[in-house]
Image 1 (cartoon, rainbow, N blue to C red):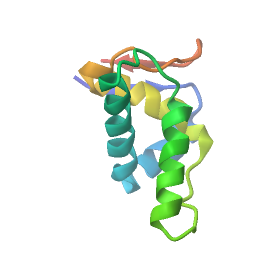
Image 2: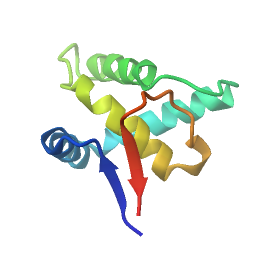
Image 3: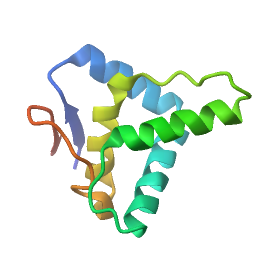
Length: 103
C-alpha cells in the first residue's frame, strides 16, 4: 500500500516532502499536540492552532531565533496525520478541494 498526498501542485508537494523529511520532529510534535487536545475532549481542531503552538515552542527553545516553518505546509500535515494516525482520522478541519489518497 502506498500513501500519496495529491494537491495538484507538484512544487508545493515537493517543498513539503523535503521539509518533512528534514524535520521529522515537526510531525511528531503536531501528532503529540493533537493527541493532547483529543485527551482534553476536543473532537476537531484546525491545524493552525497546533502549528502556531509549535512555532512558539521552537522560538522559545532556540533563544528567540524563529524556526522557519512555512504556513503552506499546514494542509499537507493535517492530511498526512489523519492518513497515518488512526486515532486522529477526521480530527482536523480541512477545506474541500484538497485531499489525500491512499493507494
